Length: 242
Image (cartoon, rainbow, N blue to C red; front, side, top):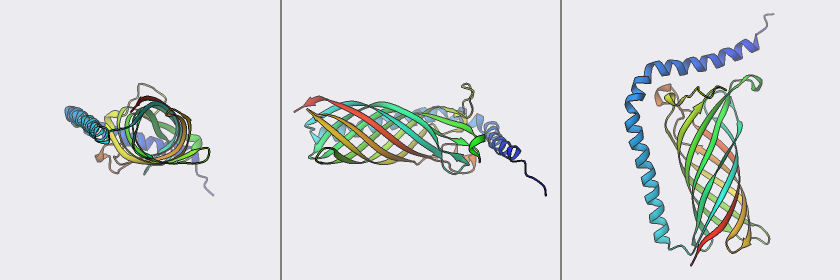
């Protein structure tokens, strides 16, 4: 009976994926270069719209309490629609939290987040696809009061700029020529929150993110989107009270 060379097959799968990327590079390099001014304009417009939305919401709400804080999170991510395994990564950033009414909160956030996946059919022979995003999130939360811990349920919209994409361990190998500059998506989360008084609190939250945009260019042949589970820790302190 003929034995299948599993290692050769795994290497061939990764080689085919790289070949697809190289073919995309040759066919669309000129098109990508010509479209850079359009991407820059679209990126600037996107950020301006997010900023305006935040200003309108915060001004109309006439917030009574405002706090600021820091967050860090562990990411467990993969790229949907290609052969890959989830990989562990991390993120960190800052936020503001505004009390809208009673137990409702809005939280604009700015953070760095690394996600991606380990490409390959067998875990022992994979190559990391690392995507580095600068992310702008706007989450809405409702706080349920408990005896010791409070509980929070959140939903969020996210816009993220991809500033680096790496497929192997060589830091100079950047795949941004084959990717979209932006990803947009939504998140849901559930967590616990311990308040120490005077608008100071600690929280831990489990979240899931669904990316809407394809990571690679549309003409790559099929959409591949981000899927990220996150465990987040946050600390907040008061900056304004009315």
